[in-house]
Image (cartoon, rainbow, N blue to C red; front, top):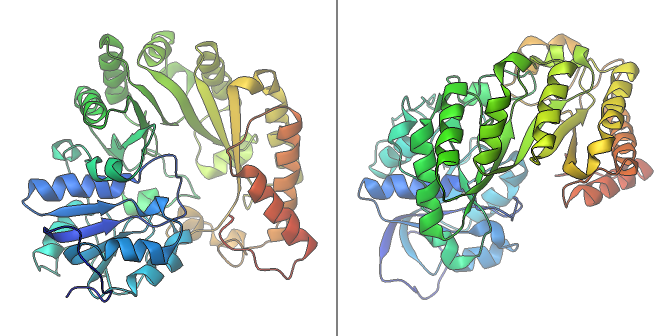
Length: 427
């Protein structure tokens, strides 16, 4: 048998692979990776079952559910470094396991694993070709044309759980190379699905799932303005509306016209997330964020006036951030507090991640890595205190926060009260 648990099978079918997500992700949306793999592998003749493991808190319960099926391989999708331990604990209970997903970084060495895009690599893995790029430490390669990949198949998810929004990826990679981000290392080339095709895919997924809402998992939905304009136009022209949200990049004012904003509003867009990161242009310049405070004004004013909700992403403690830089971030929130009911704020603390430009190009700015890096103007305690100060400032101004923000704030408060306490999984 391919796994070690004993139990009765509830399905007569033997699957080539059963793929599960791991708990501790956003429960509001399904994990898209396994759904894309299912549709692709099944188009190649493979038999695939998805278990919506993110909705199951207890790993032992998840293992029992998995054991009800017969399969050749168990695929464990690891979305984040925060899921490493849980993924390995789950995998240790089965014999034939392959790990994959964005959380498989360069330090991963456990068992069989796939780094980078999984469609073709996992197909080759299941066919017994262990020499394909991306498998078990072999450098991965990108898929040149993602237009030919099928839409994700969420049918297994919807048998197990009800969602209000499905997830699509209209692009892979990013047109930016921000110093704190590893996306460019994983996907050096930015690729996108053509706008009309993506609009058709949105309607296909909505029809099959019965859910008329789409969340995009892209690093940014407007990486290609040609594709983005085509998408918005196709959606605006269709009388059947699908509500959608995604991550959006603020660009130079002259790249986005009032007509672009109108088409965006008419396309069904209800919410956009913008990584502003800092109120300091000096800090953003070092991050390689290519927009000014005037550009922020242009985008926020146009989005707000069209009743598109905006989530602002900010983080404190960038290695060059001074007291004055931090004050400018607070001032940015004060400036936009008059629109607080149409804005929300998500905050984080600067980590030094592997395979990022801050590691490769700016190692002279700090010592250490992860959350414990430090320099003359910053350490972990400094960053925690700034996080709490910015959080309380935004709350006093009336901004909304993600549902988990208060719990995160409380863990930081407890850490500062007892600095010997080890806090994990909160940054």
